[in-house]
Amino acid sequence: MKKISFPEYSKHVELHKELVNEVREILLFLKNGGSINDAELLIFLQKWLVEHINTEDKKIGQYLLGDLQPISDL
Image 1 (cartoon, rainbow, N blue to C red):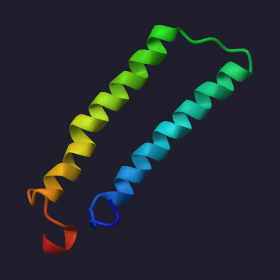
Image 2 (tube, one colour):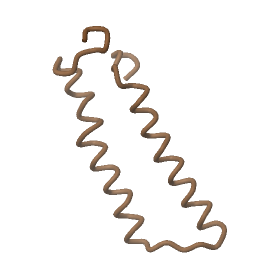
Image 3 (cartoon, rainbow, N blue to C red):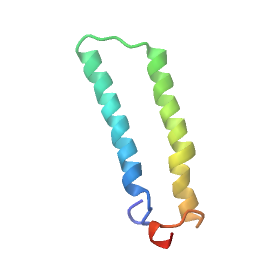
């Protein structure tokens, strides 16, 4: 994304960092004796992944195809 000067690079990286932080919180919760419904965890991860691909990752493809303008061109 950096190589292609994707205008939403920083936002995209931040979204990934947010997911990592959420997963770390879940792992810490589990490490401290908490329990999580497996199905709910899988639904959370699946929902994040599907939504991320369908919205954020799709923007990268649009940018490469010329449908999303760089910030400097707006």
